[in-house]
Length: 186
Image (cartoon, rainbow, N blue to C red):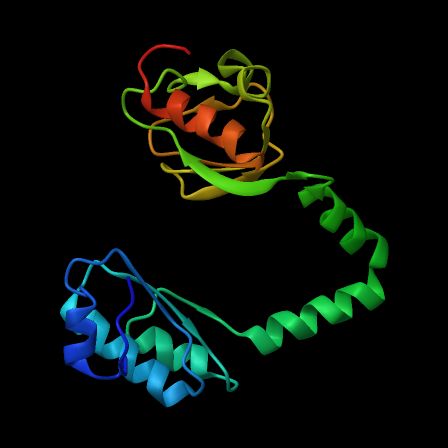
């Protein structure tokens, strides 16, 4: 479904369902229009997750003040990628191969440990995530301490609300999501 119109127009945002939307991505060609769209969308839906394009230097700060949850600067990302290709070509090549190995596409995905989860209050070793899903657990963001643990040890305890960042196929991620919400093992 498509709504054709100017997203800086409040009526257009409303006809697109902004009041009950979960997310908004604003990629207009200038920062002023992105700021206005973000500001208008935020005023219509305080729970909306908003990501906006930032073009000029320091536009990200204005977009965040207007209500964006996150900003992306395509120019900055492109520049960083080109610099990385020059400075660390082997690393970038490895990352490209790792995420697109032949016909298999690997994704980085986040999965939250839920209240009634089979893996809740178990160590990574006990949860057997690689054995049950084939995924690699790269990091865990702990809910209690709001802290990132990279390359977590096998004795790390998974607690309700912890967020795991994993690498694998979508099918493998779906298995872990099922484990993370179900009371019994699959």
